[in-house]
Length: 158
Image: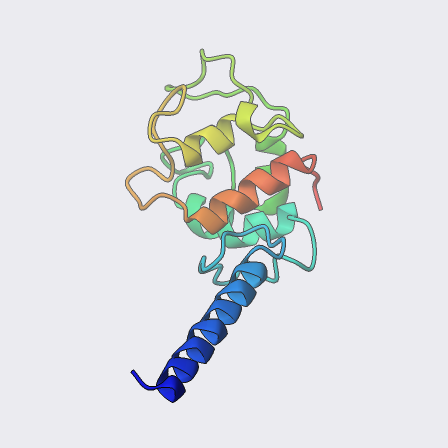
């Protein structure tokens, strides 16, 4: 290898290292979603904390209302409107055939790991019943993070 090609190779390797470092820094910039996660219509994660409006319109309404409405398969939780969904979740003890005797709380404001909603969407074997959404693909990592962030931020009705 000539001195010139060796110099060119070193410059190329140095440039690639610098680019890799910049990519790593950009990926750890504080977004609430994992780097490379397709957030779809979940909005700009760095701009504002998770809200119930965002969670309802991007997850609960399109994913859960097919079953969770007064005439559906899961009528013990009414997600047919944003206000009824919030009223059915925060601080409410579980009901229904699978979880009614569990003494679990659907959403414990400020504590996603103790919230049945988060357990049922994030665990293959939740404490009662089945993983949700039932019979569908599990929520994406971005969607799970949105649910978790909203609960941990106090589960406000905003």
